[in-house]
Each structure stands twice: as C-alpha cells, then as structure tokens.
Image (cartoon, rainbow over all chains, first blue to last red; front, side, top):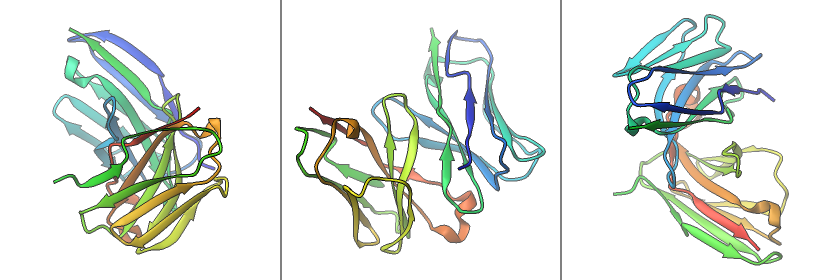
Length: 110
Length: 116
C-alpha cells in the first residue's frame, strides 16, 4: 500500500499570511492531485501534477511535484478566509488506485 | 444540474439494519467509485466500477456490496450495520482508466451515515 503523509494536520492563520502544506511518500507516483473539501461537500480537484519537478500556479496557489515524484507541496500566498477548508493530496500509481493523504485542515481568520 | 448526486444526504439507523445509498452521475463517465471518510477526515477508496464491472475492491467487509445497474449508477448496500460503519460515504466518477493517472474525479456531496 502506498502511503501519503500530509503535514501539518491543522493550520490556523490570519488573513494575509503565507502557508505551505506538504505531501510526502516513500513511493513513486505517476501523478499527484490536490483537492479542496469544504464542510458538507465532496472534494474538488484543484490541480494534477505529472512531471517530476513540475510547478503549477493557480492564482495565489503554487503546486510543486518533487523531482523524484514522491512528494509535493502546496503554497498559498496571502491567504484569504475563502481559502478555509480541508486540503487533500492524492497520489496515483501504476494500479490506478488513488491514495489520499489524511488532509490538512486550514482555517484563515479575517 | 448536479454532476454527481447521492441519496440520502443523511442516514441515521440502528445497528444490525440493512441500508442502501444511491449514486448517479450525468457526466457520461465510465468509472465510478465509493469512498469512506472517517471522523478524522481520512478518505479511503472502497470500490471502483468501470462500465458496470468491478475493477477495484479494497479490503472492505463483505457486508458492503456495490451494485452498478448501468454505467451512470453505482449503489452501495450495507448489511448488518455496525457502529464502526458510521462515516461519510462519497461517490465519485471519472472518465475511465484509460487516462486514469491524470483523471479528474468528481465527487458527490456525501452521505453521512450514523449507526446507533
């Protein structure tokens, strides 16, 4: 079983601060996805990264896939209350079975 | 129109009962999934169907039985419910395993199951 460790588990910050969420594994993934889940709803895909070393930007969110395709990070610049939610990373390996991390619960205070 | 819908949204039942959760997707996807999210928000895949055929069956008690009458529907039946079955169950769909490693999974809103 491929395991994904996410850190930190909880993050409570003030509006305007920057933050980084990490997703690490000892396994290699063919792709890695980041989802955001709001209370009472299902996860929604933010980005998919495929190539080692790849960096993708989505407005204030920057996603990076490690060179060895075993880890990824999500950096949010100038966080806003609307960024509040549960951030989940999911790795897909050769079996196509997606493995989710345990999530990072982010609260951004106004 | 909702892309992936689940019913019911909430389900409260007694231990030992049998219950079903229904899922429908109108995206024309070939692959559908059931996930369980526990109280610590850990999301774990249970089953996956591709074109009505079971392709992923993780270590799940055989009290859980998925059924796919057509590729737009994947229902989950649970027999002899136990306290530990309490969780949020999510249905999801994606295009299919042909592009599986980059597929977007579209999740339903979840069914919160509480077993008393």
